[in-house]
Image 1: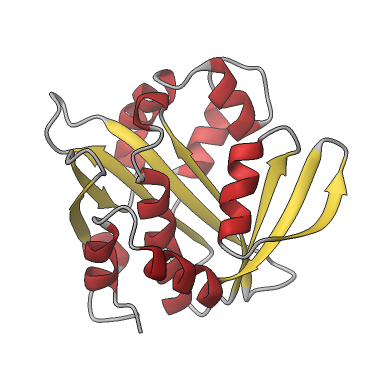
Image 2: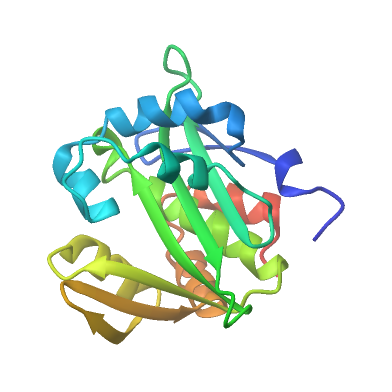
Amino acid sequence: MTADSPSDIVIHTALEDGSKVCIRTPTKDDNALMRTGLGQMSPRSLYLRFFSGARTPPDWVIDRLLEVDGHNHLAWGAINSEAEGKPAIGIVHAFRSPDQPECAEFSVAVIDSYHGLGLGKLLTATILLDARREGLTGFTANTLAENTEAIDFTKSLGGKLTSRDGAVNVYAFDIDDALAALKAECDPPGIAEVFRVLGSD
């Protein structure tokens, strides 16, 4: 890692509509913030993200998502810097595989009212850069076969279908290839700030 640890880094950037966002590493103190954010997701979005029809994930899931150590579990959250209360609007995770320590399972979630504004790409670029600095080389993503939007996004990062487990498709992609794709696209414009802060080389 660089001199700054992820917990010290805060990225201030903007979405496609100009909304100011802050991207930082979540902590256990963000329990209420995360619960409020998840409460803003539609039942459909929660199902596609957690593969469950539960209105909110169980406590143990939220606790696990907030146990970020910066090596085996990487995570970054986004908040709206301009809205009252600075609400959580998205989060991204990567859990390192114990069997393949150079690879990690990747997932990203954005609350419904911020879909289509480039937040998923901002969060993805952030965790890809963080993961590369932690020695990771590849990500996998588990996606429901019906989640065509997530599948298209994963494929845009270079994702290749590696296996199926019932209704779940498993994709794998190379971190350097995914970063090159995001950097070349430069969309949303605010992604340039992510590369500037975390380093693109």
